[in-house]
Amino acid sequence: MRKICIVIGSRANYSSIKSAMVSIQKHPDLQLQVIVVASALLDRYGSVVDLVEKDGFVPAAKVYMLIEGETPATMAKSTGLGLVELPTIFEQLRPDFVLTVGDRFETMATTLAAAYMNIPLAHTMGGEVSGTIDESIRHAATKFAHVHFPACTEARDRIIRMGERPEDVYLVGCPRIDLVAEILQQDRTDLGPHLFAEGVGESLDLDRPFVMISQHPVTTEYGEGERQVTATLQAVQDVGLPAVVFWPNADAGSEDIARGIRKFRERHKDFPMHFFKNLPMDIYICLMAKTSCLVGNSSSAVREGAYIGTPAVNVGSRQYMRQRGRNVIDIGYERDAIGDAIREQLRREPYESDPIYGDGHAGERIAATLSDCEVRIQKRITY
Image (cartoon, rainbow, N blue to C red; front, side):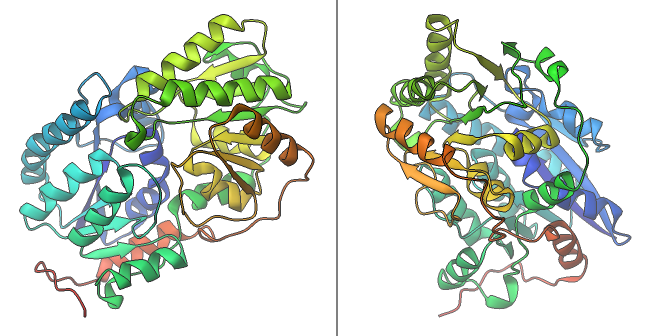
């Protein structure tokens, strides 16, 4: 039986791999090992570990590796701390594969630890392009990985052009879409007023038009986050619709974004907004299916949004060049331009589903591949 070890470091990290975890746990020839690290352990980021455990996954280990400050220096140090701690856990668990997700600093620590310890590495969501340091981390993980699970056709082709063997590249789709497909089939009745017992701010009537705001720091634009998110919040205020607002992730510049949100909230207490640290994936997807527009720079607008048909306004450079569907309008950081783009989306009906990131079966494909694929520890590139 092969032991597959997955490191969960954030809320996005978890939603991006949960369906594969479910399929691995169910597979008769695989054993799932889960390590929870970094912001996934912290209350200020929503205690994602509680969701992991509630979903029936028992962490084999927990690693507190996030250094406070959310600056470029603390991001680098947090990566180093993870690289110090993870090898000890890998020695204890002795996995046959490490499966790492995407492009975050936790991914870098996981990737390096597995590589130096000669543990075969599988990587999801490689080959995509975007803004921030994430792109560099993503491509670096690709060059270390032995097995690749890209989410879309452009990503698969790019991985092969990077010199990876085509037989090691499996186009499986995005595991997050698996969850979306499952959730959308459910008859949900849990989006009533009681939802707003969590978080802070006004209770909103979700049967009336509302927008969602999810904006994270752009690490290569460090120091600009407060100005950027303030422009987004002001644009939403100009449009006049109530908003569900999410706090930023733990990347460098997070405090700038959070400061901008706090200042706006204090100065505009009469504007109807509700603020969440975190929500279960199923609730978030139901909100995406109901919202009039998703505004900000979250990849969920591009990935889940394409499948759901959510009208989205992507602000700034964080998702630069990532493959997207018809549901996204790209705009800069100017208040008036953001407002105009939101109004344009409000005039539209929900978009038709565009399954560019998968058909809802990525997790099953990942588990099946990991159960019988063979790898060579020594990487070779193709020419």
